[in-house]
Length: 281
Image (cartoon, rainbow, N blue to C red; front, side, top):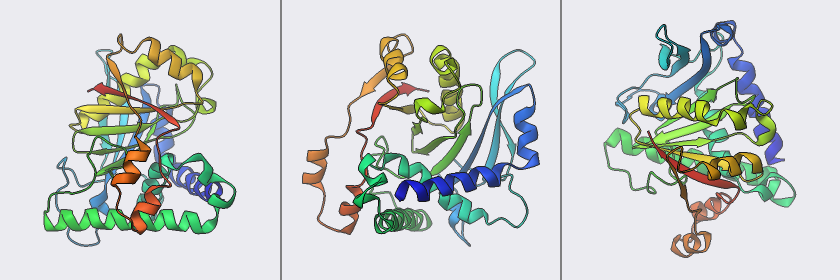
């Protein structure tokens, strides 16, 4: 049931973003990718202090070929290209939930753990943590949350990236401090065998996007069921300048976690379905 609810949100996001304006950007031959970004401060109704990257706008970015022959990300529109009348704030929340849901453990998607109650608990947990982050930003207090290098840290900015030459699905991303976290779609969402043969091209696109937001490191989350993709990266890891990041020690995390509702909800999340690689931007 949890999977079904998240799938509905994903379908709604895709439908809302299928505007004529955005389709024109994607169809232009010079454009090989698009990304939508927004800082979580867009959720504040009134006071919106400057986020970490100095930009408090939602933006559409286009990955285009310049006259000199190189690719570059350009902030094209200072807003999300939605049809008039759509609730932009609701879109922000859906993107945050869909990004964070990439770490939901497989068992949560079905059976008893996939119940509506579990999904509502997960949703409430993320909303609460985002609210705490916004309160710290407004009060200009230093964050006391997890190390920003870990996937458990919430993002200061969230992204939807679409690279149609390599993936048929959206790539969900988030960034905070100097880290840019990228959750790749499953192998069934790659475009034929192009994903394997052109990993350098789409990896470069993601690295350049992360760099444009002043991030110093990109953490790439490869799904373990994408065996060909994982093996390709591991064979060429030194060549492409990456390093393997150990998965979370779940037992140690449980030992160090306080006994409260938040820690119970945190147990629904894990990185065991991913192989994690880190690259310098």
